[in-house]
Amino acid sequence: MNNMPSVVRSQLLAIYERLHSSLGPSDWWPGETSLEVIVGAILTQNTSWRNVEQALTRLKEEGALSVERLTRIGEEQLAEWIRPAGYYRIKARRLKNFFRFLQEDYHGQIGALGEQPLEKVRDQLLGIRGVGPETADSILLYALGKPTFVVDTYTHRIFSRHRLVPEESDYEGLRSFFMEALPEEVPLFNEFHALLVRTGKTYCKKKAPLCGDCPLRDLEQQ
Image (cartoon, rainbow, N blue to C red; front, side, top):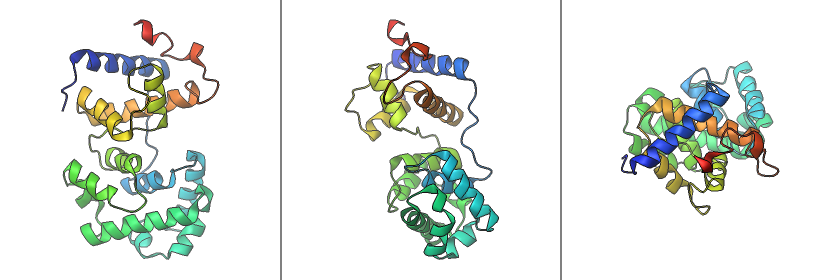
């Protein structure tokens, strides 16, 4: 860990400070419990957080937002309750896959899952059908408090546009870039990812980016 040249670390921390100063704290991820964060991480695939909130609200109204209920509930019923999140049948199957794993390997205890080493849990999560790297790292960082950096489309877009990483960089390459350069601190990883998401949504859009207003507009001259 942290084998990157110190200049890279300094540059990344400068970007972090600039975004934090401009945008303020993110208080992310939304979720009252680790369980809610895990469910939200699976539901947020290919949809907006507003839709996920509707699905989570429905689960709460049905008294279904517990490990026991989510383990026992039928897949069809679960799919109906999470319908607002989109791709609800696929996501219901993915939720069931996760809670089957949790029950079989950790007796349904999220705390026991969180006690395991980062890489062991990450490998286990990636072995669950329907859980990809971004979802796995979101669960690890935001629900379990593990020091892993979450990479998403916004991260790739921002850093490749500023020529800080190659455009062809893949998920694992980008994750390693951040984890090797930054101090291994959960709050830092948490806030940095959130700030990049906010920057991507507000300024570094896929089409018609608002470069003139972006906090990183003169980054290449620094």
